[in-house]
Amino acid sequence: MTTYHGVQAKVGAKATTPAFTDADDVINFNLEQSRELIERYILGSEDPQELKAGKIAINGSFSKHFDGTNFSAMALTLKDLCDAGTVCFFALFPEGDALPKIDCENAKVSRWRVEVGLDGLVTETVDFRGLAVTIT
Image (cartoon, rainbow, N blue to C red; front, top):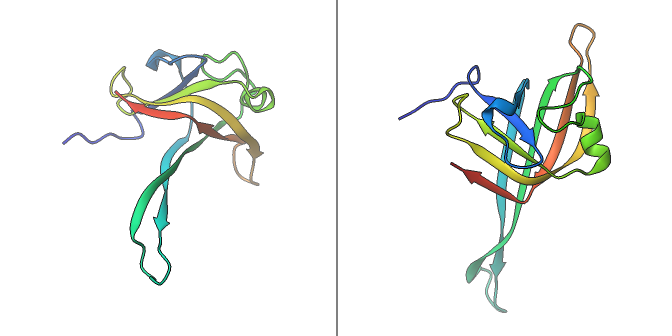
């Protein structure tokens, strides 16, 4: 069994599938895929008769230390990605190398925010949604 650790993981973004060499500095990364389940009932029964597969939702977010520069290989800042609605591919490389790779494909940034605490560093965070997740 292989175990990966955050100190080796890399995250990259590009207008097409990113390579691990496109990686940029992030301090956390989250990717989630969920599927809605629809219960089918019949009149006179309290119990569901069947579960149907519903819609799939793919959401993610990550944070990085704010530096105001373009992110990864996107040629845009994270705020610009949110403003423009640019399609991008986000990839997590758990081992810090080409494989394995977890891709969030055809994603768009839905929210950008900047945070700072009294004793903290300025960070920026983005939330995104994607159309597909692939693992290679």
